[in-house]
Image (cartoon, rainbow, N blue to C red; front, side, top):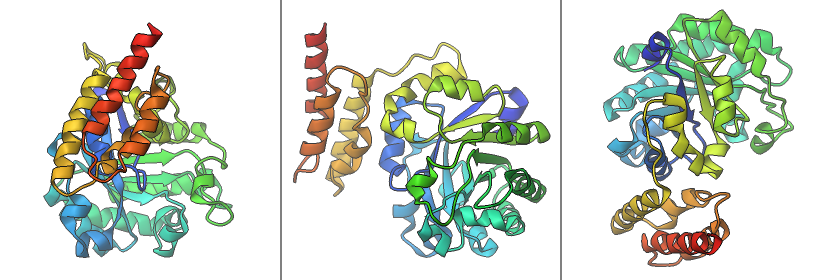
Length: 336
């Protein structure tokens, strides 16, 4: 995937791993909107992969490909075993989290705090690479530094070490993380963005895939970044306004790709919700990811209200989505 991207100069757009958001239902939904974007799981701790309910933690629908598993951990042996399991499950990539700043993650000695120990990150990458088939990419997602680190040293030291260890790609969230004093939410907004340092990293590593993340709000911004790096990762924008994903395939991958029809996407997700409910799930586990689908469209408020109220009711099914779509249709007729 990454070697082909570099060889063919084809950019990659991905949807960031986001805790509590990019679960299997979210990814299935996003795949209805874009066939080409690379999808990521939520971070899964290596210990949980090894000892937990693997089908619940790692299972995914085949339609999700290409899909990457993000792992959290700092023990090379455990990460190697978790990567081996990921390979057996059929993931298209295994990614190591070196960017999450939450207290819970820090207490497990993984995430952004690993920016302080790039040699350990490199050992983890080397162990993961040795554990999986050569064709399976092992990648790193990191920050540009933490706390009082000089990003010019922290980021470039990490890049040098993980490159020597064999990483296939580095995805960089282009802002620092402050491990004390800022919440995870604040760490997504308050530290200033520094896109230029990521561009310089790419210039220094022309033969390594470098992707950028952080503050990318729309496809125009994504296209602008793609002039400087190999890939762009969308986070909250893709989640809160998923309708923009319908334009990804045509905008970034070119060709005569037609955008999916949003009502068709809703009906497909209604059928998916019915299957999920029949298997013992709840409708709102699916619909919660779809609240922002019609952002900026007449009827968007009615859509949001209907999903927020009706999907949590006992016995709710895919009909919640079908009924909400009727409200969008009615609003469109009224606005015509």
